[in-house]
Image (cartoon, rainbow, N blue to C red; front, side, top):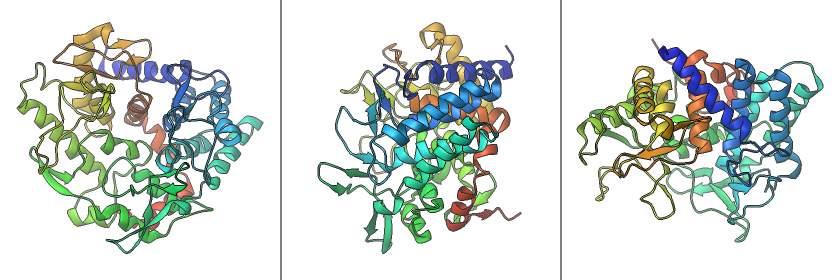
Length: 410
């Protein structure tokens, strides 16, 4: 296979996961058929657009599946002021079997996926018209301003991460600093019904940390998924806000530097793990060496006395979803591990979640969030599909304006 044929195969098989692992009634993604990670359905909605665009499903079938997801969250899914749960039963989206409240980050992923469908399914049929209506209803229903809490450092309000229905209070954890939740602030700024004030963007950017890690200077966050998720939706290649203007970069360039720092770390290979170098990239994923079977993996903050969080477990999506920023290097990684591990790591639904170079362990699961990020990143790499449609939403353009984004000065 040529590189382009190989990438098309990975995209196709990854999309198949979101088709075949959907609950037959609700449409929600559930690898085990029972439990759905709510935010992964935002990626599922976009995967269905990819399936229609690539001819994996008829446009009508893809639209039917997307509408099923949107209807479930609208009609039966539990919500607090429009915010959805973090984990839910796949059949109805009513209950989190593990407890917990309502998560504004997961909600933003789903509603952003809805906005993608709103633009993609733009024809006059009754089904596509209902998709657009349902996507709007879900987005307009979210009271982002109900999640505002004071920030003592910036002297304005920022977004709390969640609402605890048992305690009947907002989480003490505020969404601030550079990580995967940037999309949440932009969805909140652009909300037509319950927007947050423009100055709340300063709460988000206030705790950015500019660091040098393994030869690269950038706004730091340890794991690579934090540099990927928002830019699955948003094309930030040629725009800057105040924080990026200050450093003379874009968020796209920031993520590119983060990827190169991970590659440099793997080449240095301080733990002497076999295969590192061609194998690179750390992100949160399933892990056999963590007690609950899932672990944080990433480069460390300079003051972290434990050092880099690396036990030899590598998520395929760390490098795979970085194809947005480093296509040549990411494709080389994917081809290398495909050749090295073969059917142990790659099956009908594409790459499995992760593997451990020290123990030989290979995950039996496909993490829907990481898989979704990689599939959608590949779609953007191939022809900018997600960017092309998502950036058409006037709410998103208004959000970028409120956050102070302007085209890069040449």
